[in-house]
Length: 254
Image (tube, rainbow, N blue to C red; front, side, top):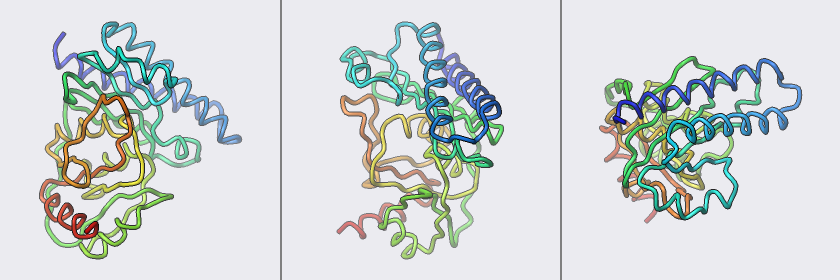
């Protein structure tokens, strides 16, 4: 088994799960969003967990759609390798006709670090992967853009944008937001107020492979495969902007 094998597996699984979700959305339509969201979560979770059990039987798995007992299984915390997956990141957007800002996350944590990952953006027709990390756009200075939640942008981020001379760009899922940093649609993503490991593991793996900055909003390292999978805040940005954003966040929290 090589690291390259894990890169490819993450990309292939995320892409195929995304294709299945697109087919489900096309077949079922948007007549009853709660049913579409529930079936999308279930179908993608079953596909990813069964595939990983077959292809990496000795590895642990942490999925958003796992049962509480599965998430709290001590064997997962003791494993050297754990796949952290979000079968459908952005269920709200998935069930809204015309929206493309939802994703599938597949990441591999190994002995304390993220070592492989992929974010499929099925409705955008692309998958970002640690195997072939995207080339970061350069920051040319001046006004920049910060991706925020469509429905609950943190108040302090609005104040941060005002002080830093930035514009806020509402985007759906966390994976779509971080991917937007990597593809040049925005220059940063700042979030505080509640997330879990599966919301960011795969996009952070790709961001780090691409050379982007990724940390907690106080600058601390992002830690994965913890007993408590809560990971409440995050900053991902072009590396040139990280010092400015971290300093601004510190000032706002004094």
